Length: 314
View 1 (cartoon, one colour):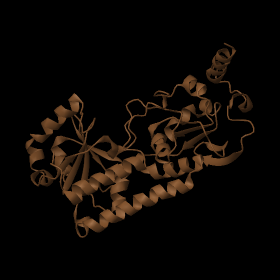
View 2 (spheres, rainbow, N blue to C red):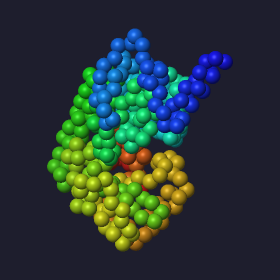
View 3 (tube, helix red, strand yellow):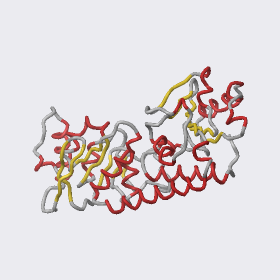
View 4 (cartoon, rainbow, N blue to C red):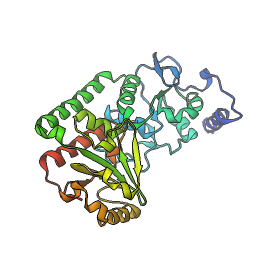
């Protein structure tokens, strides 16, 4: 009973009246555990040399943590699907937005998050040392990965992960040969009333750039995405088109399925070169992922669709 009362009192101190509780009172990782300093988006933090109870605040940091072989004690896992990870139910769901009381009860010794959560930094940093990764768009996923690796003391493991990523892309380039530069890859998202073209300054854009694949002029821009109307549908064309919409290949939402069916029978869509050539493919949501696990799944797809050519088109 005393322990429960203490948790409730501590939580109220954290969120009440914007009063900051002294770090030595709240920070549950303080004590004899050795620490080291790390610089991040919000300044500097003294974190455990070997953190054991990691909480991540978003999927931006969840995938990098899992890719490094670390199972966090808490994370927002509802509706999260990360390639190769299966069921994440062993991780305590902290909710979206993160629930401070749930985090407090998990007694973390390190909290990780991305910069769009900076507004809650002062609160969570009183629970445990907190590292916030700077990020402007999902194109910054590699920088986030390296910072997470440094925070976890997993730099060597991160180097192995990224070496594998680069090696696989080198193999893809080699197998594509002369087709590498002559194949324009279009990536689009289908909405009920418009289409979004993914450009270069976004997760999938960095992977295609690292692979050395060309993009259509409409997508060869240093911006995340461009929304177009049906009248500009030619801007979605390429030698191959990868289509993403909400859901997965196995289970699309009803609105996504309706939007796709309407697109497929649209006369303007049917005039596109990739459509005529049967080079349009529906891809899962890891194409807009947040880390090396999704990146490697995308590379699997690039081999499957561009090299093996063994998958029926959309």
